Amino acid sequence: RTRELAIRGALGARPAELARGTLWTSAVRALLGIGLGALAFALGQAALAARLDQLLLGTRLGWSGIGLFASGLLGVALASALAPSLRAARQEPSRLLRS
Image (tube, rainbow, N blue to C red):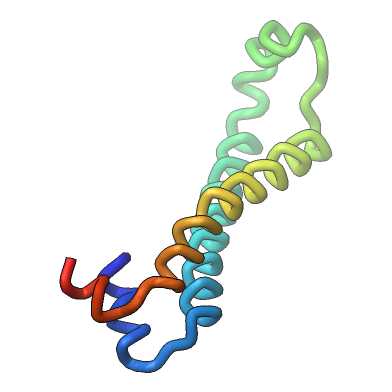
């Protein structure tokens, strides 16, 4: 992605646009993964109910728990994408293209 961001920067994209685009891509990927995980949970919930009860010591894991967990995952995904996207947005495009 470094070369892609460098080319976009060389073509005139502002640093804020580069950072926003990178964060948006990360958010979409994280939401897609969360959605697929929620679908797998919904489909496999009945099959795994007994095992989940053993692992969670009888605590039921409902949709509110899944939602809380999913929002935490989304937060971690965005936080992990923030530093690289800001660093790449601040770099000089010509320097990035040379490396």
